[in-house]
Image 1 (cartoon, chains in turn purple, blue):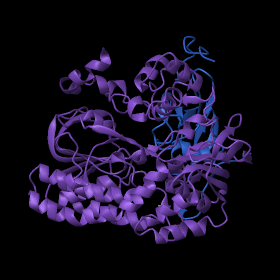
Image 2: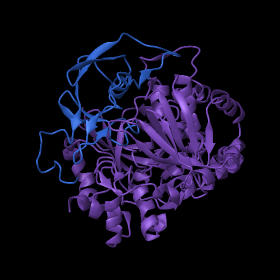
Image 3: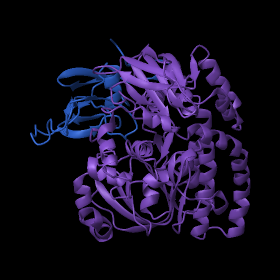
Image 4: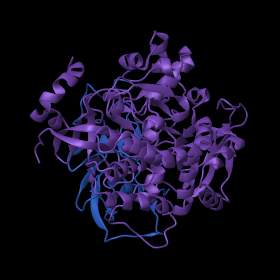
Length: 479
Length: 110
């Protein structure tokens, strides 16, 4: 394929996790033509990531527990008749809902009449001394490796962080045959109990409790540092105060070859930002998120652009499905496939579902909001920006020299200029602006949206098909 | 010390094949990414960083962090957590950006 001509599509969904799938199914059910782009080889998103076709699951599969929840999603998507393009990276959205897509060799440019962004979230970076050592893996990464690739990153693991994904990662490791020496959970026990307010959790909680029956869970504990030469050899944990600061004299060293970091998730709002959606900072939902309201079908401030799922604020897969339904209805209404009254009628039970999750959501938000102690762990030589190898003392110097925004820190230190495009450092830089300049995350800010939102090969950027649509948008980058 | 290994329970694998990493043979099964085969073979270091020569391996495992980059069939900066292993593939530990040694990049910040 060389390049596709600029075509218009009725409803385009970006992301095929629980939110994107539900949006696609709902919009199709309302009669809309739906095109779905997803970067993975198969739909499912991070949480319902499928095994590759060449690894066939057996009838009794201890790691297939989520399949009871994901199977209906995949069946509904299949039946809905939406066009699903897997292995496609959407690397840009222009404010008129023009999408820039990279899929197998050539660029594609198309316009969406209504756009649903269900771009998900990724594990929050935690700049803890030693966190760049091979053998340190994120909680989401461990789950992906063990469940969808059937490989253990190591034999003896410590998990540290907070929230339900840490328990999910531990469960996967135990099922996979790893030895989990313990889970250091920053939240107090009573906060964890709040998670039990999630509707339908009983069976799952039972499974976690049974699987982890012999795994120590240390609440109000966290990592202090990770040690090793060419890989993890040891981890040091300590008791934490309510702000996640290690309490002196409570340190304990553990011999492990693997450390799993699960300090909550950070939403990926880059495409919404590029599309012109207004964003706000919400600590409990993971960071910067597009403003959207279930009462308005998850519509953003940008006309015809809807958001759903963890990318619109971290709240888990069930909430993501419900938000996806609403966004799909909103998109179908936007393109005129259903009227306002019918959209409201279909949305009503979905909104009821969301209301049932409100108490769980509040519990989750209280657990996941990062506390200031997380940003006190970095010592002078702790890497903050993994790509550009910028250490904490360089960030501190920049702040002492007057930097008061993450873009100013980037300008001085290069933190945020690497291949991950700031995803692995900006949340920490923001936290360090809090530590050393007393700034709130809202003030420390975020990196301005830029094309490409994902690294793409230069020949893609140079393809003439892009010139007409992207030249104005790329202008600030060239300057 | 052995670290990674394949999980036996619950799945049926196809016929294994071989590729090389820094000239040494590594086994993989159909459907596995390069990173998976390397973890199962106890190879945790994917690359050495540009400025400090520090070891890096699989971190996010979902294509976001770019830390598991290696040179694959001569192409640098391939995210091994995303790319399926193939028979006969030639994979190399990456140093810096994977280009020939550039004195302008080496050791300028230690």
